[in-house]
Length: 315
Image (cartoon, rainbow, N blue to C red; front, side, top):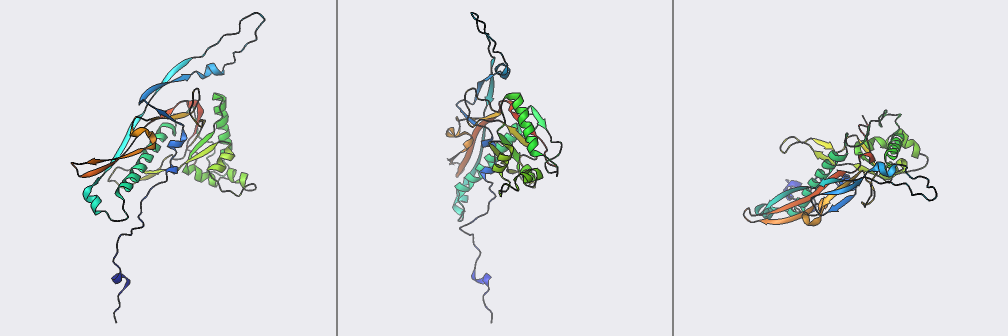
């Protein structure tokens, strides 16, 4: 006797409690955390810089009775920034909105999509400005790569810290590395041997910060599609196989040195800057709503001497 099958009693429909989208976590991107952000009211402007050589010169002299003290001074100059405006939109037609099934939320989906797009743009732009060779005063490749059995990443970092300290008087407090480098360090003998008898923790940003004796370690874990629209997708990690060791203050301030600052212009997007403000407005002629994201910033290298770049640290 024929009986109904499972396919006879159920008609496939869209699930209303789940959907699948490839959204990367915001924490995978470091651009908004690498350098302190400076809110600026003008898209372009200048700021003062002091000559380091004047401040570090030993000039105080003995003073004989009845004589004037030794005189000195320092040079003052200016540098400039220019915050570029970045924007992207997605239009939602009235017919598309009317035909959308649950659980699709057209406005929320567009907002998340555009937010990811802006995170990628910020990360790629930051990497181009700060996470590459030719930017910092010191650019080195370890003699023994960090995925080799006898590598010494902790000593390499300490060498970099001493180089920056000698050149600037500041000890680097931040290490930024790609996820490829982080993966190599998780199995690195130099790292593992130092913790196997003293800690049950796995290798993490916090543990590496303690081993490197810095305030923080940031891992670049963002990935993006380098292919043009319509071409076969080609995915690449942002950051490749490099490490940046640098000094940055917790907050910007007057006469406060830093490897870099991110100048955030509050003249767009209701002053949200790299917070990437989202706006929605009506396109009546097109019978559609536009969801738009906008931000304006300039990644500014303030002191190239406060950075120490290690390139191609793994094979």
